[in-house]
Image: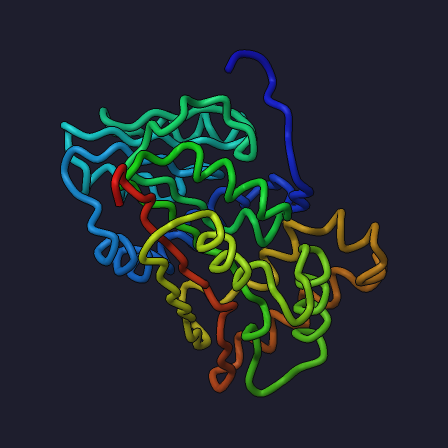
Length: 273
């Protein structure tokens, strides 16, 4: 996998100053729910696990802890700078690669768990991503997705700046109206031949002062180029909308619900089953 990897999909989030911290915080906020999913899957000692589209860490730390020194964890991401950041803190049983999650070039049937988070719902082409994940999982292994459905991303009390930022966020990603990508993964895993396909939607509630208070403004900052280029928020209004949204989120009576994290996973059939 030498050289600069090619990229599949339309991933519009920019690697700006503060983006690594934003992604790490997102992972920490969602860690408990991710742990519940891994508990249900039964990830254990000696497993070989792959985290596709892992960014500067993904869920590799939790996988590393669960598989132990006799297991192995691989993280793969297109962004070579993210990969270098992840390598700097990697455990002995963890390796990071730069590559295309849709066409990894990794060996067939090499992993007990293939995990993908927030890639199909942000970069698109879920059919290709599911097909690659299925190719990489061993018989008896598990393919697991966590994808975002933005319909539940709502603020109370409502505010025009929040609505402008939320609408811009949803418009930057390949959502499909009444059949969101996050929910479609369930059908793709079933049609791909997986057994025992599970469906577990979860969401997080956030109050003023909580660590994730700045989720929406911070994410829109990482989408600045796409938001302005697509005319979703005029450039002259961009910073003002961010500031107004942040002021509203700082009010002690303001709360919001996150996007729904749709967790879907299933088991590859073993020979004879």
